[in-house]
Length: 356
Ligand code: SF4
Image (cartoon, rainbow, N blue to C red; front, side, top):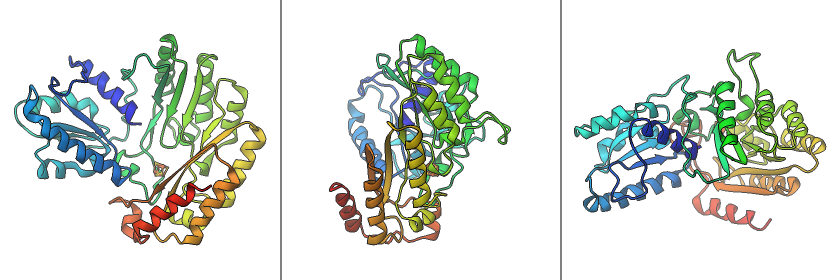
């Protein structure tokens, strides 16, 4: 997601006469695109800000950095009030406002815009690719999320779910095809719920995938992530019909225990997840599956975590990622539950996964 956001920011700034540089000393403006999904991601940003502060005196323009994205939205004015390392904060829906915000900092004012939008999809912006020579590209099809999994901060930092118009997605895929891009990954927090207004009866993800796949049968199409709670048969059917839609599915399970899944508000049980895997493998026998898991979520016992390990063994993923839970403020878990699994137990559970 952040690569795609960076490409949107680049396009907006290029249209306003900025040119990108990788030279930190020469740069007039340093933008840091942030992620708030885990505590460790935020820690890295603080480290980076400290490093850039150390560089300040050697830089041509002795200016603080500018913070963009989810962490900016999460910490809002707190960053400006408590740190002299930043003078501009812009949330994920305010990138269009960047030229104005930057001009304010030019007159030594601190600027902030973290308003979330109900309809911003940057549909009319053609992202400028960070690596023009790459044969792969990301195309955002929607922004935000309405699912409210109890551990997740995304609905609070990236706002309500919005789908990008199909014509704008197809136009971008066509342009990428003309530029020789060989592989496109469609991006959304929950691609299954892609739907154009009206929410009921609008065009669905399966239709979009079908149209994207038809743009260039030589171009490989991937997508991430589908939510296991509402994986439609139609999507599997489209994958089956198009040889250029990769038979790789990333299906984040998060836990293998139904009680933990309920606490996480994931909307499916272990049994329903396994049934979905079985039915997908029946229709797509050569499908490659990958997944994300969390260990040490609030109240998770050793036995409940064993169910996660046994699910991994049963599904035999091609790839599975296991992350130690880190509680995020503003989430439902933060309000309702206790982060009561000690860090050493989370660590031990993470290590156990390596033995599978
Ligand atoms: S589906 Fe759940 S985990 Fe994924 S972004 Fe939405 S709230 Fe977060």
